Amino acid sequence: MIVWLNGTFGAGKTTTAHELLDLLPGSTLYDPELLGSGLRLMLPAKRFEGIDGYQDLPAWRRMVVDTAAALLTEVPGPLVTPMTLLRQEYRDEIFGALAARRIPVRHVLLHAEETILRARIAEREDASGDAEATASTRRRSLEHLGPYADALPWLQGDAHVVDTTRLTPRQTAERVAEAVRTGAGACDIVQTPEPTAETLASGVLLFDDQDRVLLVDPTYKAGWEFPGGIVEPGEAPAHAGVREVAEELGIELPRAPRLLVLDWEAPKPPGFGGLRLLYDGGTLTDDRISKLLLPGAELRGWRFATEAEAETMLPPVRWNRLRWALRARERGCPLHLEAGVPVG
Image (cartoon, rainbow, N blue to C red; front, side, top):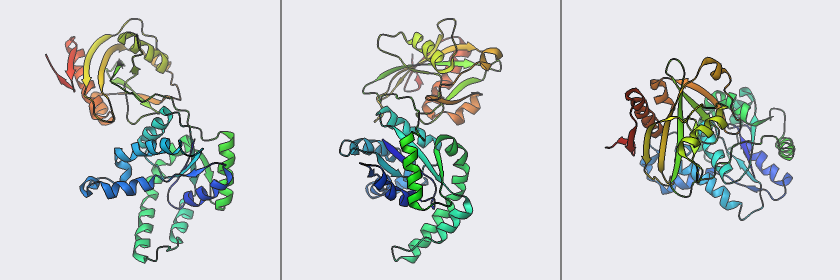
């Protein structure tokens, strides 16, 4: 298990983590910031141009998961992880990958009001003896207060909140330990095993009366997606699409959907690629839309989007697949793609 202590600078993550080690038997401190420091030493400097920090590196996010899994083969756990994580898509990617490895997460947000955070940042001691470096750290800490405020709505909905305003680090750790014992902050995420070879997946496009396409927001991976999923061994692809729509949204399609696109996705490590099928599930009436259901462990939201809106929501590979699927729907003829490019 991982106890993820989230919060911005000044919330008390590091001091609480050290206190928590005494309260959770077998626990080990796991600091993913060390992975970021290592990547800064190993990667070319130009790789960090145009990004805000190491969290924007896909390699860091994957290493967080791989290193946690490796550590848990050496220590009993839990791993106590004091790490600010403000971007929801990064939370989805990391926590979803941990769930795929059957590693449960207790997500705890250490929170304090901005005035308290500013005071703590100003009072931070200069432990390094480098006044200039300390001043730079304080500036960066203050710069994070805005993004933290922006992220607070989703953080409070996702994590168990501990207000540290009037608590000592020990008292905060005691609150966290009690929360862990009672199961608070548990992230109920569907466990989707990581593929070990090429996969076959079926997605279904559903539309409203304005021809907007239905997109869903998974809890276990970054970015919006189409309803659908991996085709199980021995399962017909069209049936898989119908099954996934029923499981994810509570919608029973009356017939097998029409194929729009077959796309071969090239392997791109660490992904294995495979065949991706998109089907036309037809137009949903207002009554059926009003009855849409969401499994909380798998999807956090849905919305209908125009083609232009979908371009801003979907990762490039999925957007390109949707673009060609919409053209196929207009023409009434399915398209065969290889790596997103029509062939034949």
